[in-house]
Image 1 (cartoon, one colour):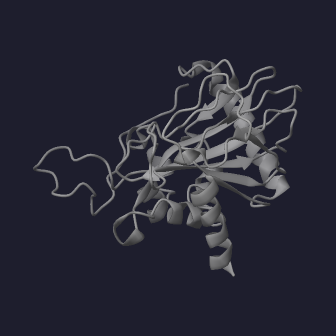
Image 2: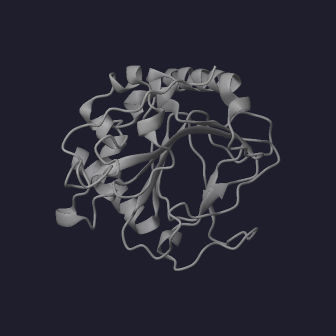
Amino acid sequence: MKDLFRNKHLANILNNGYTVVNNVIAKNECIKLKKIGKKIYKDYGKKIKIKNPLEETIYNLHNKNKKFLKYINFKKTFPIVKKALSIGGYKNNCDIIIRQVAMRNPKKGHAQQLHNDTRIIGCRYPLVIHVIYMLDDFTKDNGATRLVPKSHRKNSYPLNNKVYQNEKKIYGKQGDALLFDASLWHGSSKKIKEQDRWGMIFSYSRWFLKPDFDFNKNTPDKIFKKLNKNQKTLLGFKSNPMKDEFTRASSLSNKFEKPSKYKLPN
């Protein structure tokens, strides 16, 4: 039954570019995660140099609270991601890594332009998969994700400020998860009401692609010690570029490389 479940969602991602998995996080857990995230934003929001006037954004959740660590390889979604990013690899298997771990809440009055996060068009197989955990209900009024089904197959980019006839808005309940190929044209719809619409985003890619952040440099030692082997692999501690030709002989290391010393700003 589990394989049938995963294959259904895998087929949705490959054919349509996306799938929705219902009720993967309990509502009380969503409330806790959102509360932690909002406190982090209060503590660090003004220090973030990546300024986005359209949304409140928190990056690198993994190094700010251990509560987020289990979602790195969350059992209810990760097997689907792993299969989607393994297709086309040697023997349909491929190591994968985390690209980004973030939380976002769009601001009232704004909509996000449709875009392609893979940054290349015409990919036969998925290179990057996003998982958005809905920590609030995603509704027609609070900036729900919009996307164009099957657009991950297009050999073009979406036009600026254009509304496509077959666009779809993804509504969902608190605790649902949206998984999609990052080549899919996607953005957020206009937020009409002043209400929270927090999404927790885990982005994955094939191991040889560059992540958005250098986790080897931004993971405190106390967090590194709490990670299991799979989580360390996903954060790239086996796939850092070789320092030189004298250090190792393979692009993938056979052991975990410890992160640099790092402390969050005061």
